[in-house]
Amino acid sequence: MAISELEKRRWQLALEDFLKQRRPPAHIRDQLDLGYRIEGQSVEIFEIRPQWNDPGNKVEQSVAKATYVKSKNHWKVFWQRADLKWHRYDPVPTVASIEDFVNLVNEDAHACFFG
Image 1 (cartoon, rainbow, N blue to C red):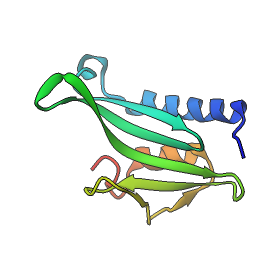
Image 2: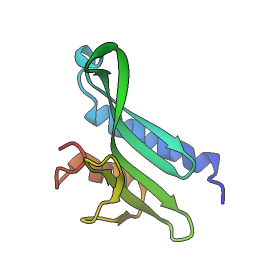
Image 3: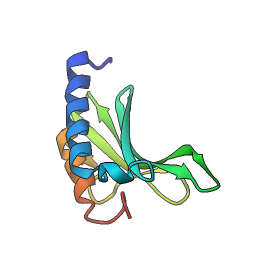
Image 4: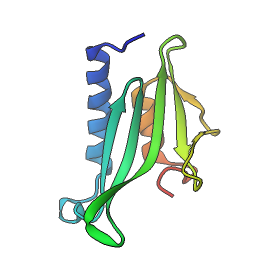
């Protein structure tokens, strides 16, 4: 089932609020920044850095992902391990809202998202 534009806008606002809290200072954003994307029913938060051997090329490193399950009205939370695959975030596998997701990532109590 498709997600309404109103719901997607709410997701964008929550993610923008997260970026306001968590983004590095403006003077270092060319070396480290944060971004997000919304694809279908999933949102992903990622770091943006220069490529180590080609600083003119920017690369993204995934931080956290959540997928909305409309039938259950919750979000499944994932983190990316060293194998570069998404794994369920076992300490809190689901949250009730996008706001709960961004708060969970921002808190990073188990140092899984930002290390």
